[in-house]
Length: 144
Image 1 (tube, rainbow, N blue to C red):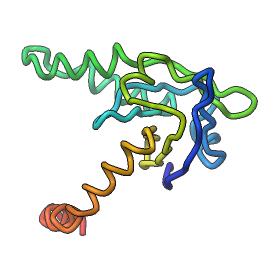
Image 2: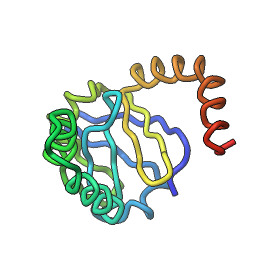
Image 3: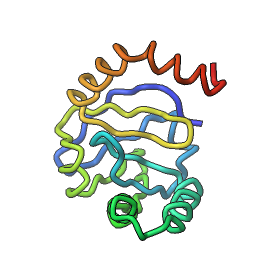
Image 4: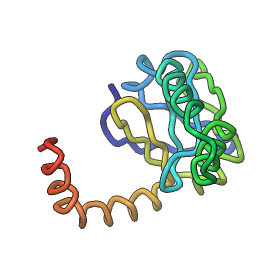
């Protein structure tokens, strides 16, 4: 399980060190793809296969569904952790997420999200302001 928020830097070769606590659960090979809110999502291979099956089975009759599936699946890339625990971020994903040097790597249960630090801070500030509303909705669903 992935939890926590970590600060790391993207090097000049687009390599990003994965937090040590995440490396075992990610394994040697993982998949990185476009995420929501201009983040990147990093999945262990087994979790990615489950997601890919669900995406692949979505009805393609609706244009929004097709677009989302295309972005997620066509945007995915297999990555390997090197001996220092780094992954190579493909240039097109770096551009999509607006990654510069400083990044946030967040554990979200079955996946890891990668954000540009400034984007994450802005998003987190907005989300914190709305957290009471979100908690009420989750309460209605029986989560809290």
